[in-house]
Amino acid sequence: QQQVKQSPQSLIVQKGGISIINCAYENTAFDYFPWYQQFPGKGPALLIAIRPDVSEKKEGRFTISFNKSAKQFSLHIMDSQPGDSATYFCAASLKWGSRLTFGEGTQLTVNP
Amino acid sequence: GAVVSQHPSRVICKSGTSVKIECRSLDFQATTMFWYRQFPKQSLMLMATSNEGSKATYEQGVEKDKFLINHASLTLSTLTVTSAHPEDSSFYICSATGQGANYEQYFGPGTRLTVT
Image (cartoon, rainbow over all chains, first blue to last red; front, top):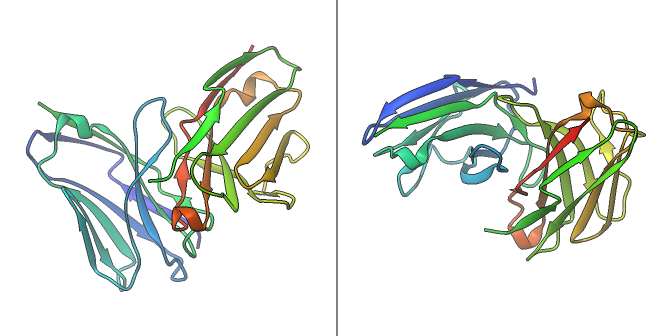
């Protein structure tokens, strides 16, 4: 019930391409869905977040698509750049500011 | 976004000794702080949740007597690993949230603990 499943485990994209990472959850009480970006040896940084009352949120090159009925959400990175190479984690929580349940992570490599 | 710091960034200690890690929210009052550990190429595992002025709530399987958490002020939480052993070697990361951070969860830069 508390799990968040993330795929793919790793992703290689060419510069300028679109990176897509998917997550699925089971607990319908989850109310907050953030994405974090983590570089090696650093803490995760909040990238973008969405609540289930909207189906899409865009911030710059990053877009979250949310499908409440399918209990799935995804991160799209447009015009991917080598500097985007990092590990991305989706997460979910019952409410803003409460404990997060993380997905397994996706290691993104953007080739120049 | 809000800023969370951790100190030290790296620490090496001998087996059997204790080590303290500090987590500070620099520009907001953190009513809740979280402590995670992360092994190489793995996801973050929540260890405990602490609310200012209250005892920490530990996740199942986390030894509360081994991982002592104190959240004595709205800007500081500490994690003390007592009687550390090599298997405690890991990347420890804190996060903080509060009204001043719009209840988003902001993470510190992490502390790499190596127990020899």
